[in-house]
Each structure stands twice: as structure tokens, then as C-alpha cells.
Length: 403
Image (cartoon, rainbow, N blue to C red; front, side, top):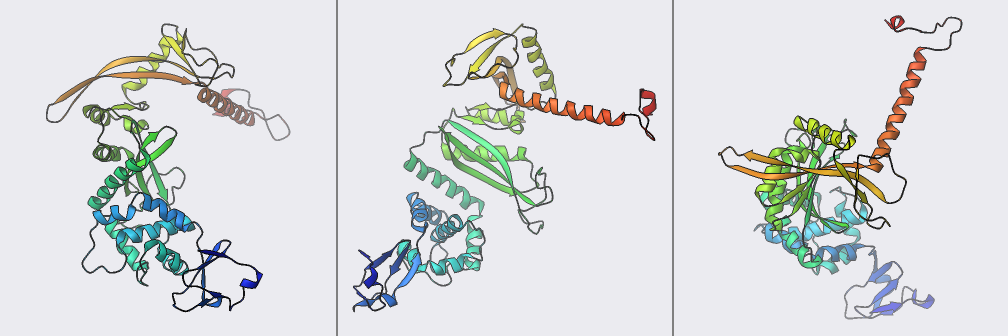
């Protein structure tokens, strides 16, 4: 029951019944349990903020039960379970934007009453200490336990969001920070174009595209010096185990275009859509495809935006110059080629690969702007070599003078 305060109810001696709470804007007064009337000066005031919401979202997918089923409680473990500790820690991270272990214990102390109400159980002083959270990290970092948690979370998400997977996206990224590097830690120095002087961890994520939303399914976290190409097949294997679907479309970047990865996808009855890395014979293949279009020997398909008045597919010969703005996105053509791959055991698999040669007009505009910028820079550099003649400066008029 909520009791709205007024000016005469703010006295330290205003009597309140057991179990009542005082609504004071963004604060709630939790009253001590007693059989006798209580007074406002005996109440403890805590901010609830977004804690109940964050807790409810995790409870909706039964995160605590999922973790506790994958990581049984040790006989000597006392206090809150690992699943409950993870939910409390997640709530702290999302609410405060702070991932440090050392600050969790003091935060729990400031919100102890509301967290106990959400847990339905008392919190021990040792539950959210730095040492206990370190034990939690050790428990959930076990590979078998982590994969079991991912699998169960996906099944719970299916029940909550009614997701039917059709398209799966794989993408790698890095997370950098100022950490001490040692051989056994995840943080290692690796290739990073943005933070080359910081150690990093390498992350490969597998998610499904649900209309305009993405839903994370599997995550692989490895040492920072690990190459992206070695992470695709382990994540693909886990995605198949979790999703239990065939005929899915897997998408990724050019590093996913290795023949072994494409063969693995086809072998399991799935499809792929990805840019081919321009290496080896593929460079000549792309050049030949473009040459056919430029010479007018291969008609192209014009692709318009879905909401455009011209949202139809038309065909024309050759590639025109950049069009006026009118919903036209790209032009291209397609061709097919036979593929065959042989496994070490002698088994072979054959399929027909569809090649799409696409010219994106927005991408072409960006490339033309970059080319123009580089030409201007080159012109300025050349003019700097031949300054206007004046006292003490001669103008270079021939190539021989440069040597």
C-alpha cells in the first residue's frame, strides 16, 4: 500500500502501520518489521531507479535458473546461487555502466532492501564481494558450462519472442583496453587498426536477423592475437547445435569466403551470402565479369529501393553513369560456376555457386569523391615540386632535373 505524503506527514513522529511504504517521488521508504506502530524516522530510504526493470527482464528469460542448471551448486557454496549473483551483477553493469567487480559490493549495500525484495531472500555480506564474483567468473568461463547456458538461453528466447530463424549473421570484432598482458590471459596484442597500442580480446558473434532486429545466439571470446578466419567454423558448429534448423542463410564478410568454410556450410544443407575476397583467380574472374558488362555483352539488372515509385527490376545493356536520385540503388548481373571440394578422407561435394556482380551507386559516389580528393592532393604535391621561380628558387621544367 502506498501512502501519499503531505506537509504534516513529514514529521519524524508520524505513526505508520507495518508493511506500509511512503511514495516520495523517485524514492521508496522501506519500513522495519514490527508489531507496533512505526515512525518515519525509523524508515530507510533507497533509490530504486531502473533496478526492478532490469531484474524483470532477466527473470523473464529465467536467467538465474538457466545458469544454475548448467553450473550445479558446490556443496560448500553458501548464500545466493551463481545464477542469482549473475543477475545482480548484470543489473549493476546495466544500471551503472560500470563493469568493475570491486564496486559491486558497495552498490549492493546501497540497494540492499530492494534487491532482497526482488530475490525474495536475504543477502549475505559475502555474496557480492570481489572474491565471490571472481569465483562466478571462473564458473561461467568453463567452456562446457558456457555452451550449455547459450543453448538454454536460446530456447528460452524462442519461447519469449517467438523467433523463426531464417538468416544468420557472423561478425568478428575486438575489445581493447589498458590491461596487463601475460601468456595465459585473454588480453593480447593483435592487429587493430584503431587501437594498435592496446591489448585486446577477439570476439566472434553469431546472431539471427529477425526483420529489422538482431538476436545474439552464440559468442566466442578468444585471445586478441587470434585470426578471424579460425573462429568461423567453431561458431557455425555451435549455431547449428543451438538453432536445430537447416536451409538457413549465413552471411559474413570476405574472410568467411574461404573454400573450407563455404564447403562446410553447403555440406550441412545451408546457404551463404558473402563478398568473395579478391585473391588468386577471383581477381581475374571479377575483371572478366565487369568487362562483359562494359562491352555490352551482358545485360544488367537495375535495383530500386522497395518504397520507390520505380520499385521494379528492369534490364539494360552496359553500365550507365551515376543516375539521378530516384530510388535507384544499384545495377548488376549474375553468373554461375560449378564448385567441387574434396575432404582429406577422399569424400567430395559438388554444388553450383551463384555469383552476383553488383555496382552500388552510393558506393561508386564515395569512391569517385575519394579519387577526386587523391587527384587534388597529387596535383598539389606536383606543384610543390615546381614552385614559382623567384630569388633562390628554381622551377623544375624536366624530369631529368628530378634525378
